Image (cartoon, rainbow, N blue to C red; front, side, top):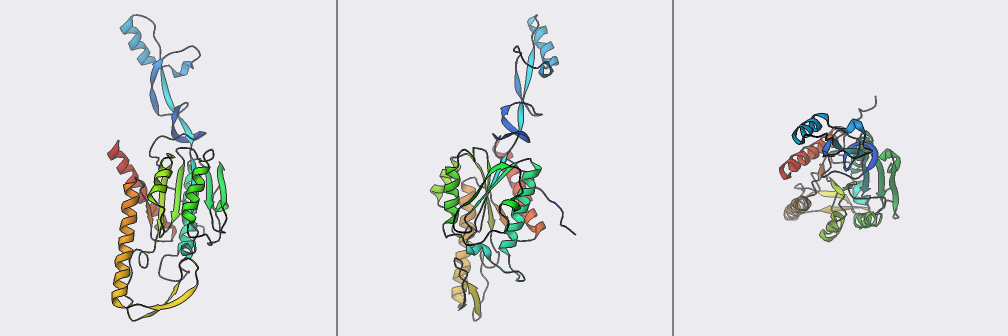
Length: 303
């Protein structure tokens, strides 16, 4: 039996400048349900746009026929682009282990973002460097992200995330201000603050999707005295290691500090992250709903 189709609302930080015939309120005036304001009638205006009660009040006050036209914000379709980090560290862990299966989490994330984008009538784009070279699909039509990202390889270089953000900056025509940019990564090697500031200068709606295992990447268990198999994060080559209690504790403190620093940095840049710690559909969906709740709350606080 197929899993249900779940969607989360795309909540923009500000009114977008998108494509015609969508469901989200734009910065531009046009046909829509959200009132932008009123102005005097001008020849050529649609008679249906006249605000008759306001016109009657103004005519009575001035003693002459006056007509007021009510303007609305246009309803437009947003653009959604996913930048997917496909370094070897994003290919951990294999199925059947009691830890976060990142490849499955990525597939579910792409499915949820894609279905939610289609529900908002958004045009979807996709970028990764999974094969070493750029795989760029601009947001030209309404497509599922599985069609665009699918089962791409996890052979991206160590600086793939920075490369992807730099490439998006260069695609100014295809990725205008107001575009939703979902950055899917474990952020074990995050972009520099300067690069984030350049990204923010583009006035995109950037959403980091942080995919980290809560046991091995956000913290670290006490495995002292145990010979453990491991894989090199950038190459995937297997190996074995034995850590002392002190080494395990140091790694735990380092991982917890790295996680706290990442979250603090992103929120300091007003980039509220989606925190993914599970790979099943409902677990990932819950992470996106929690992000929506935080975004609605913080937007209400700042307005």
